[in-house]
Length: 421
Ligand code: ATP
Image 1 (cartoon, rainbow, N blue to C red):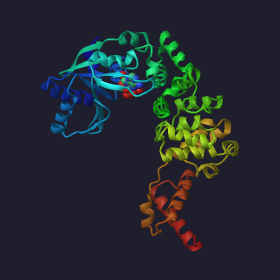
Image 2 (cartoon, protein in one colour):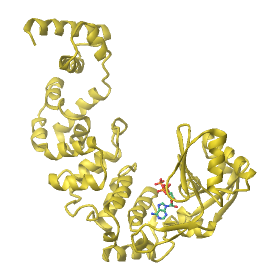
Image 3 (cartoon, rainbow, N blue to C red):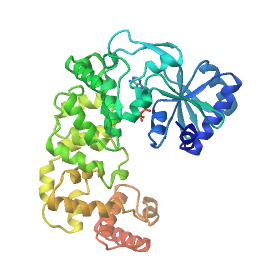
Image 4 (cartoon, rainbow, N blue to C red):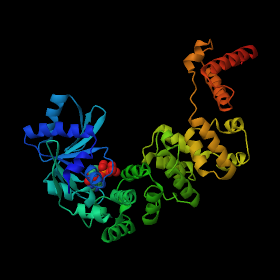
């Protein structure tokens, strides 16, 4: 393995962080290793965005020095682990640990351990590789568990027979990695996983921990494959028994995976979640929202989408309409809801939604609420109404420039004043 190639694959900024840490570690005789996801991704030649590091001893002392020298914010997380905030970059750093699971599914008891014991507490062989850090490079690739061979063979393999019992969230993780990388589960691992599911291993762990791992799956670039695989291996009962993968949802997920407005959705996991839960009872939705620890805004979107008469809206959109008519039908819906409808729609309704989104996504008004106020229109709901009407005029092509917009607002403002609106 050419370690220089791996090092050169790292973005400059991450190299810089590693070299600063290395210098500091060296003064204190502390060894530093890159571990887990980033090592795996460097070998697979995939983009590395996070750094996960371990040190062989004295994490506390190293963190103290980091605080003194660079005044970085440091946040201890669990025992022997911390997050370090390098300006806008967050680094996870831990001391080599060993773990003991007092009960299946319980959180482990953690104590300092050797690098080897640190490797054996991990989920899969491909996530248990280490690159020792040196001046401007890596000095060694350390593989206690055959992770490199498994990466080459494209397989996901657990490190212990009872791995899925110790921590059932690894079932969801295994599916995520398998589908993200296009790997296969090693035969023994797959049998162990199926056995654990059959023996209802999910019941030993809190739904919140399973939910957190599940949400990470929904943030994947492609969600259809992992969801289909979860459905095949264990279903979604670990979240709620009412969740089913219908053919309608499947086609929405497939479209979402290559959706052109994905980047316009601020919180990407909400769309697959809205699709998956679209046919649930509101009471169930409340339970799941709690398990997944969703924000108020997310809960509200889910509820609105469940309540929405989707068939009715799609049928209203199923004939050829002008942009302004489409706007009238959709403009009071949240953007995320329009996206879900677009993923669901077929035929003319899809074409109408295409048109609406094409116009809407690129649509930025030139004037702001402040400009409207400066035109003498009193603060209050009227400003919002005027901006809405302006948007519609923009969609219809009646106004094009900032000057047009100002003229239009003035005209509307005058009309409203006269009519007493
Ligand atoms: P991703 O690319 O999805 O972020 P990652 O490998 O960086 O993947 P994290 O969940 O950030 O995954 O975890 C970092 C590392 O910690 C993993 O690579 C793995 O070695 C270890 N790990 C995480 N979760 C578990 C677990 N449930 N059981 C054992 N080891 C785990």
